[in-house]
Every structure is written in structure tokens, then in C-alpha cells.
Length: 167
Image (tube, rainbow, N blue to C red; front, side, top):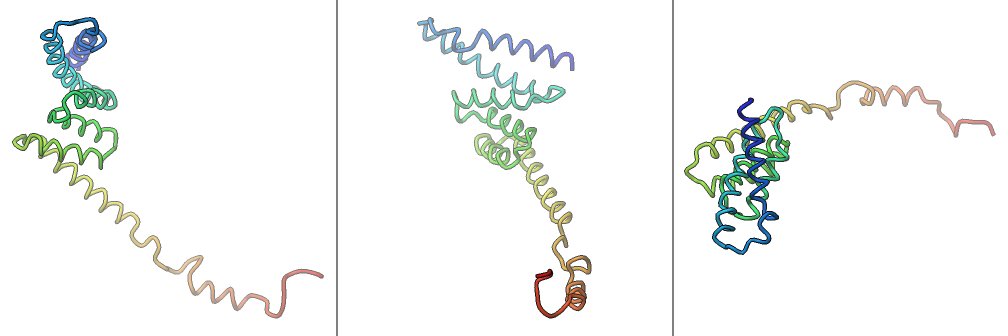
């Protein structure tokens, strides 16, 4: 865990120097291109460090992946890590969308396919558990509002007129 923290700190520092704001006065297109080329892998590596941190820093990882996807919308690694961050944040439907997209962007990546399958299985298991939890909840069983109770209270109700009070 100490090495991961150190790596995370190193990537944070590297990104500080690679941020766009640092390069606004630069007119050297080659240098700007190289800075951008370094910024994307540094952001993705930092996102991975955030996902592996204890406790997980999923929101920070999500922000980093979004920054990469702003620059490169078809970046498979950023899409995949965005999906992983969304899982950590409990946004399972959106995570499934991103992981499916990552599968299309990197069809040969077994880890992406495997994580998508795990997520879909998790969703099926949760649905099954939810169904089991609420099964029979609205069935009419003997109890407070059962038919037997209604008939008994109708027999016990006073008959003949009116509305309960003096008048």
C-alpha cells in the first residue's frame, strides 16, 4: 500500500506540471503535443492508483477518466476505468454501459469482458435477491386486513342509522 501511495503522489505531481494551464504561453506545437501525450497516460495511471487506494478514491478516478475522454473519446482504457469507478460508486447501470463500450473499443481485452460479465451476474443476483425479499409481500394472508377480519368487523358494527353522536 505504501508504494501505491507513493506512486499516486508522483502521478499527482507529474499532472500538476502537465496541466493545460501550465502551457498557455507555449507556442511550440511539438512540445504541446508531447505534453498532451504524457498527460493522458499519467491521468490513466493515477486513476488506477485511485481505484486501488484504500479507501478507494472512485470519484477522483472518475474525474481523471472523464478528462482523458474529453481529449480522446475513444480511449478504451479510460472507458474501462470509468466503468470500474462507476461500479465503486454504485452506479451499476452506467457502469454496465461504459464496460460494454470498452468491450467494443478493445474487443481483445479479456479483463474488460470478464468485468462486464461479473457486473451483469451481480445485477442478476441482486434482482433475484430483491425478488426473493419482496416475494409474497402483497399476498392476502390472514391478518389485520384479511377478508375474515373485514367480515367479523362488519358483524360487530352497530346497525341503524347514523353517524355516531348526539344530536
